[in-house]
Length: 390
Image (cartoon, rainbow, N blue to C red):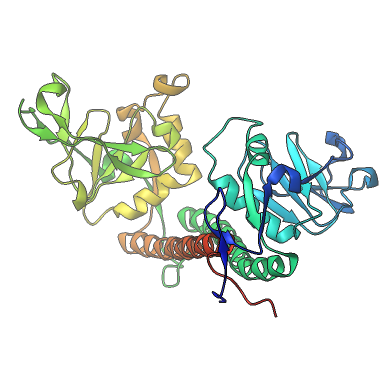
């Protein structure tokens, strides 16, 4: 780092004396998408990749030479998203509302990070607003040789973040296959190859738990909720007992399978823990405790997190969409699931927990790298820290 810098005053505060400032709109060169692809020009394989402006990734291929962006490298930016992607290979654009950006004054990689920094300061806006707001932002920038050095350093973190993201995606695919294989018995854990499975109805392996209470008017109670898509339990604001009225409520018991009957079809299921002791839930959140020596709670939760488990929850939730698709508890208890021995259930759950932990650790690493990148951008793109250029 080189900190022997002379600073000057500007509307943006003190900036390096040898840096320039400008509205981003005056620095950007907007390249028109040369051709709008029709559906039949999207191919599984082809000469050129098609980059989707929303997903910012390759979604298909085309052989149409007229659709290719030749002013390379370029940035692809959607008006309704804060994501910006640098592309260094010939490509076509899929979707509408996209801007293809370049600059004659700023190195393309440095421009990407400059735009990222600027757009993060914008509030969440509606469609077709981000680019308009971004053009009017005033930013500062050094000479090209320093731009290259700064961009190269930040790119090191950017590449690391992309690598971890790819690993997460690979592990997620592996975990999806692993869960499907283990929970159907298509893949057996070593030591259980010859174990036979049976199908049992939930009424034979689960015990309903209903520890009701009559709320006291002047006592504060904390209720729980369950997020859809297996996102787990969340805690609501505490309420005074008088506000609960005649609402039927129950104490939360730890180590239970719990479901939101209104959104069971949307995978609103979870496992209660010691953390929820002393909290309450309404009758819409029935709890079930696995029978000892018969069923492992983690195995049960993994099974109902699977596509097959979700389809069973939907089957027991007749009716139309939304609140009309309420889980019938009697129908739920009639559902049948495959039940290996308790020992094999525990082994399956442990393997899946280890696989999930790997993804959890990778996500933590990704978050750490993103935080480090943000710190670098904050000091390098503002000139607070300088890098040697020779």
